[in-house]
Length: 151
Image (cartoon, rainbow, N blue to C red):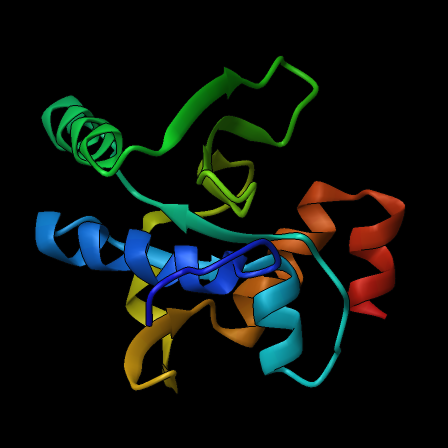
């Protein structure tokens, strides 16, 4: 489906997932989208996924280049020592739809990508973080919103 206006961050996520799959970058959908999958409907203006580019700067650079070719606005920020997320890549389209790609979450091991749950969303197979990993990720993050999600 083609993005036609604001409020369509899940569609932008599907476009980003196509690039991740093409480049062979492991991902798992997290946050509000994953919470909804597990039965906790929560409003969010963006869509989030954790990705693995550990030790592979070339794939990360290819991803950033591919995103720029799609005329998407890209910003990245590094987490400080107190932040449970090492790096976030914010992706935004011309309608202000947004996807956040999270890299290096505190306490999360690479084998999380072996335990993703495959689901169908708008005729596309997507990978959602496993429930146990989702709970652990939320506990490590530790914000009040994250703890409420766990409860």
